[in-house]
Length: 452
Image (cartoon, rainbow, N blue to C red; front, side):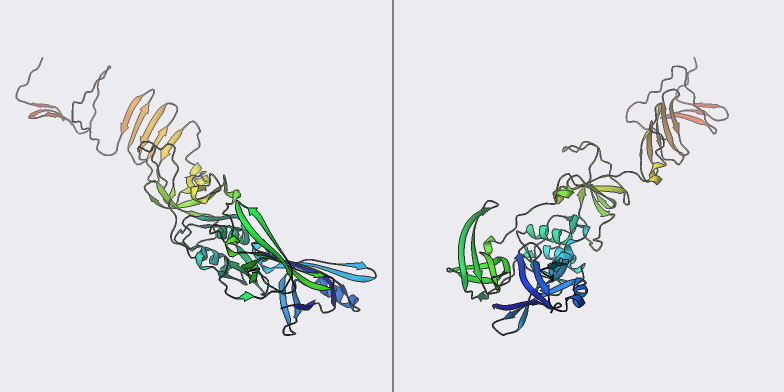
């Protein structure tokens, strides 16, 4: 299809003098239009300035009908006086720009999900957005994916790049639409070229062959053509008015040269996100993050939990958090797979147990505690049982229940200033058949009893 004429649907009184439409893979498509308002300029000038959307149409020489070549959002519009006329300048981008405005925070922990499912979830969170997925996107993500300080468009680009795929925006719909990966196409377009150039370039360590052609034929990104016996697809397209005619310039590549190198989000390096422990198993935890917008996943990832000290031989410190405990998910670098869980800053409620910096303590949710003070060590269950090692008073064992002392060998009790045993009901010393009982008197029973 060749273009015989061009106009903007909502601006019939605009006489277009220049129009440039640029289409590239992995980015938004753009357009810039310049033109003069006709006689009724005073009446329609304010009306045109209120426009938010643009639809650029061309008249086809094939069927003599108007066809849309660009639909999108107006990002800038201005009117200025030039030679006594009002010149209108419009800049616009494809509706995919709507996906590239607000940064979001999402964590995809379910590694059984496919790249298509992750991308489809993003698409479904945006109104009036459609996408077509390459079948190769139906593979599991394997590693956690984190969207942090990224718009949906930037995140989708990075997700696609993990599969060496590109995003390809479309500007023929009234909504944000794009391809996730290159769709399979069999139709080959017949093109008459005004000029043909061929070049070889190096890109990311690859040898890329490109062909540059000029034609009056209108093609879209990814359309297939045969030039000089080589089947190639449109990698980049530019439509522009030259000498009063609409001329298209295309960069063509073989499909194998449509690729994206994998890259990471540099904003992740060194950050941590607050959350709570969901489950604990061995030395790993499942977590729920505070501000994560992804709440529908059932399969949470198991993260390593960082301890004070741990050795590969099993020695070290093992002290896992409890369900509901505050934690932080820490990213030592930009790679999501290297993230692990670390302890968190205590809340105000937790700080009520930590009022004296001279004291150190280990305490569980079951109120079992070991506390180190400047002059003593206290082991207690906070329920009537306590052992105190006091620098001044010595050792105290306090219990509201029985105390059992058992030894496979001998028990030796020594007291430099004496040994005192107190009991309200009685004291019994037993060795085999020999008994010494102190209970409202003294009873001795044994095979031999000697008094010296």
